Image 1: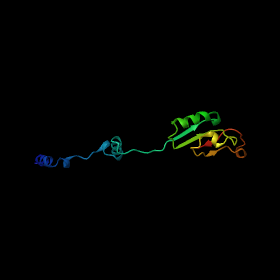
Image 2: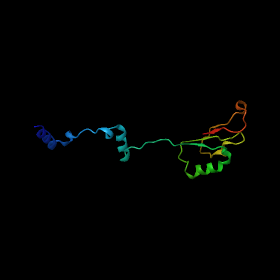
Image 3: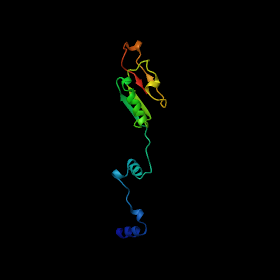
Image 4: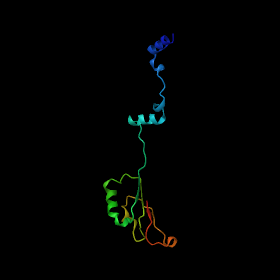
Length: 121
């Protein structure tokens, strides 16, 4: 009796008998993946580069080449640590005018060290 009932429903309206997806295929994460593969959703994540350079003034030419060739052009934030920069270097020597530069050099009065440290964003 049950089989006849299911068969009659299946023949008239088959979507009513579809079982609910369970397990790996039922989660929100899996549904987002399926939408991503179909091209309906694209995650926009910012790109961030963190580099520990150790004496940036030796590598300024290399940094400018990377900024102009496109490899770093699409980065939203570039953080460079251990720059060893001082007040002698201006912002225009570090990067082109397209970027906003925030610098933090080591303070001689606080640390009693003349070289080392430093951060450029």
